[in-house]
Length: 579
Ligand code: ADP
Ligand code: MG
Ligand code: ZN
Image 1 (spheres, rainbow, N blue to C red):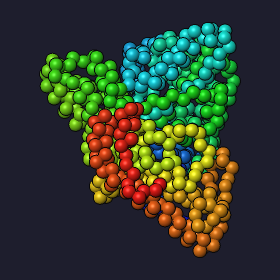
Image 2 (image 1 turned 180 degrees about the horizontal axis):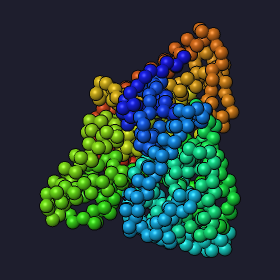
Image 3 (image 1 turned 60 degrees about the vertical axis):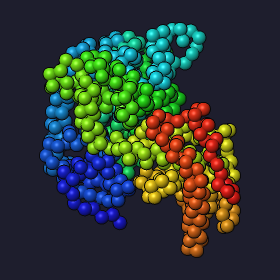
Image 4 (image 1 turned 135 degrees about the vertical axis):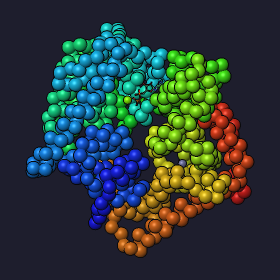
């Protein structure tokens, strides 16, 4: 039974900006929406303010809120709203186009093309080169290969090598995905067709699909060339699982895109590049061979990457002698390329405002405050205390993981914030391919998962909210150990029905008696408690190592290789310890 509460429109906007909204259904001017489970999961209803649709659309997209707009019965209200919306969208599009052509001065021949609305840049005229992109060396390296294909396709074709059809750039917003795509075109010297996923899909059914068709037919005439689809998730969301009704228009657009991708052969000289910051919601069909078969990760930069990006953006400004880019790189953990570009620009503005000839370190300090204030709203930059908590947490995982079986060798600890939500991570690489897990390994794995939270408890005597994902995973594992693998006193009876692996439905529990259910819960709790206790014991016993390692990690942000190995070799088992 779901109850729906009324909310003010302004409240709705606030909740979106606070990343609390899971999805929204917009029907006429009525918006029903639901908060994420982590924020109570409640349903609300509010009323769209007149003319606010374009902004709302942008906002929903920016904050990754799932949204559906079911077709209304064409009542009077619906028709009126339809008009309002399209007028609003048109105004939005016009404003955007004007803005673009102002900025487009240096970009070469920018022109809107017929129906497809794609922006076309002439050969190598995107105004970007690889040298403009820094701190993402691995991605650049992979794309360098793609540039070679485009430049000298004949060479590859002669040997019969298959040229990739589609490259998917995956990474958080502002890390340089769009810039990289433009750089590929700039380096290869081929035409570049650019369109954003959200521009395909409009109100009227069939428009998106025809835009896709149009885009590809234009591109075919200009091959070799690049088609770039930004924000692929706007059309590439997996089909048929939307929570509230389907979205025919989007599905049709996606189907058309898949058809077009299958329709041109490897030798046509068209390369499709797409970008997304939400790879997890993409339709699996997009990743089949012959479609986006290459994925390139464009991640937030580490310290040296940040310094390189600062250098790129500082190249155009006069720096005072006291400006230390390495020092700035140190204090900007979690910043993306876009944030760093913004920082340099703010500092330059600050210097100009003060009538200085050069940008001084003081300008950077002041700019930092502004930029960080902006970022904190988007909850991306950690306070020193938060950073410390994350560092202890990750070291906790690593130290417990070094001692406990089941997770493989701890090969990397990082506190460079990654993706949405992950503030740090500890990487364990299995020593060999494992298909079976022994009971002690399972328990070890659970203890390692709880090592992060345990470190927080041992050090601070309290826990943060950062461990929720670990706890979820640990609980799942414990539950599976007991109900699926028969590893508890209930014996080898499967209490979960296993489902075919490619159905995402997960597992559901067999109907069991109340007593058995209570027993399962008790055993799960017991398993978790034991592992938790073990993790705490290990960390208490290795308290000095926990402190010294955390200190190093706070300084370097990433620990790996020989340095990490020698630290982990020092972890000692508590007395009487049996994993
Ligand atoms: P994304 O598409 O991943 O959201 P963009 O490519 O739009 O990010 O980045 C926005 C701007 O931020 C770029 O135009 C550039 O000025 C700056 N920027 C982002 N990443 C980098 C990078 N790795 N190196 C240099 N500049 C970057
Ligand atoms: Mg982009
Ligand atoms: Zn964790």
